[in-house]
Length: 155
Image 1 (cartoon, rainbow, N blue to C red):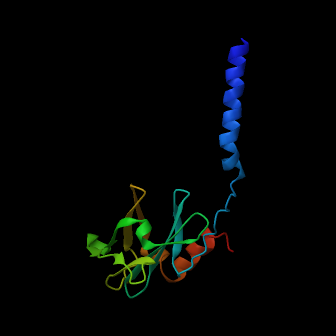
Image 2 (cartoon, rainbow, N blue to C red; image 1 turned 90 degrees about the vertical axis):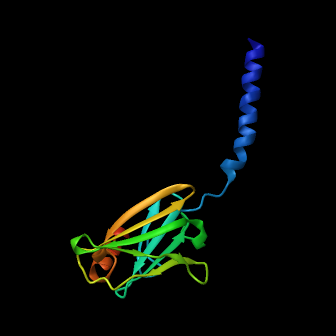
Image 3 (cartoon, rainbow, N blue to C red; image 1 turned 180 degrees about the vertical axis):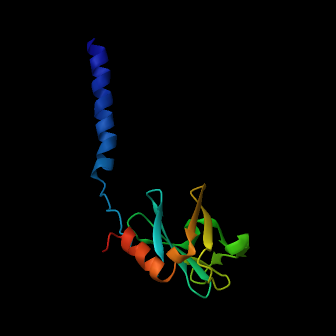
């Protein structure tokens, strides 16, 4: 019985030694969801915030940040695809590429005036596909402002 107790105690001591560095790591606070580039901010898991910006002229940008909202390079995600679904089921594919500075993904579509249009966004992060759709009014003008107010709790 003492031999079993000794092994259990040795296991607990070893676990405590290996756990101590993890327990002493500084925990970073979760970042806010305020847009830094004029878009709307959402999360993918706990490690990625992404901000989608759509200008009235059809320019689309995707900005990335970590859980604490520190900027990430565009290369943190891959296979970014954007499609605008317009009234009547017409679809426009927007070619997305990493911007000249490497800080974001961007593409140029046609101006979106259709209030029923939907922007579909897909990307891969840590070998996992993310797919999300946004009603265009939530990305521009008063709809975006309301979305930001709602998602940031008025802050």
